[in-house]
Image 1: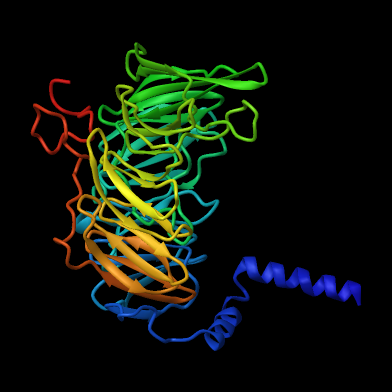
Image 2: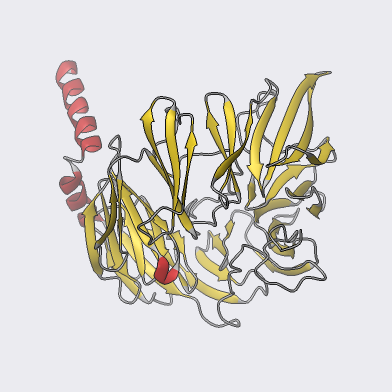
Length: 462
């Protein structure tokens, strides 16, 4: 009996991971699931999927749903399926009418670029090992030998490369879509998908980890500008066009931290700060295995008095210091979202400026900052709320126990099991504009809204 039980268990495991059991699991799910409205008031539309989605991204007039072995597109107007393709992974590049869907298969070189609305093939590649997708571009890497690779940049809908640069291999850690590179990690929240905001802007500088070295690539010029070999007690990340060398030294029974930021192209020191913990080392040791939390061109740290900080990676300025006991929930180039020490209030502040708004929130609520909205998911009672990051005006407020899958400029996709629904932003002054260069143009003396970020690092003349 034990042998038969073990044999059946092996068959179930193999069937699950190969997808053989998917039809049976879907039928069982359909028997136990309901089709009642996911929200009160009702969503714009609600549709039943063929399986539980792994991820979702709003791409122009469509929402792209990634399943385990296929990707499908559904129209934002009604939720009706537009197309589906066999694929193991999918990612969205571009935004609005310029968006495309990139799909591929695990352990198989190459990818396809398809139209989000029609599913028609726009471009096909048969050699790339890895792909990175952004709001303003796409990168891929292909190798001609173990130490001979090429990194190439594309416009999302382009058919001719923007630039190519040679790099000495990629190792075994770079494959499929959006593999990790040396930068910041986003701040995440339970019941809100880690990638709900969709693709971000391509950073001005990338840090590629190759054979225990870091290669700094200028994504505007399309060239490798520096090559670094981190020391044993330091971690190197590239944020906001700067190279941050983070040291964690063990002494006196504790870790002593320091950060030195240098110009990515010249290597000249720009700023340094001793005593700030960027949380790259955990569990009481000094071994640094994690990238710092942050968003775009800012990083999150902890001061010596345990207060959380938001630091401008470009020039080292402290853009925000929390009050004692407060906890950062989300950050980007414009705002920081904070939970007060008593746990009952969520507030936002404009980086480098003043507080914007605050509202009550349950201590166990999940909160995430996206460019269009601050999303709050409450429990007991269950609610999904979205507010304008700048004004605090409500864009969505519904009763629901669903999770948030994707957030777009005009609304959000929520999911519960195999049920999918669309909530439209409304009221409260409309939908906030998303700055094209990623930030609040709050630098006195420069009124160019396209400069980007509190420090205006991409403005002419800087």
